[in-house]
Length: 283
Image (tube, rainbow, N blue to C red; front, side, top):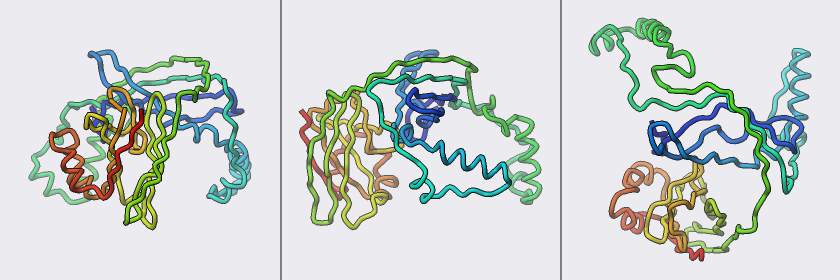
């Protein structure tokens, strides 16, 4: 089944250990995104944000464990993170060890649940009666477990990988734009790597969460985000000699425009509805 962004998604349950860290760290969300080439072959990308990997909280973990051993509560807030967390330096070369314990996905057509009564009978139940029925059904079908055969398919590991990694920024470049409209909305820069584009928006006196960026490639083709952050866009299968960046009202985009992103005329809609537009030449 596709995820909320319309992509075929798999989840990797795994542990990751980077050689430049003293302790293992969970890197990324475990979600990979791609597509099935055939019934049993999936090609996708696992994207890691190294900011999470480079932030070392081992001292905070130690303090938390000491507090728990004494029966005390240790609250980790931003002040604690700022004081005891530290940023590590990314080495030019390092090793990533992966222990992949399970691969799982969501069933597109899950089996139907037999509630043992009609829709009308279900609606006639009191809250207490429905909750009791709900708990019995969940236990019967194993829905209180993860993963379960009613919702998921999965493959148990484990599999281990040792990956030697060499940092390569030779082909990365940033194009300065520094363009803001009268409303204080605009584009500061676009960073291009061999794998993705990162757009850096500007919102003067505006909340970034109130807007949504949309990017079309040189052929007018919609570029879907690499994950949950719409500012990071994969370049595979796109002509990125130039791109057009549109910034839209968030609610308007989600309610009225998002469902049309693969339809003819989407560009014309953006031209009319976006609060900001900028074409950027990347090559």
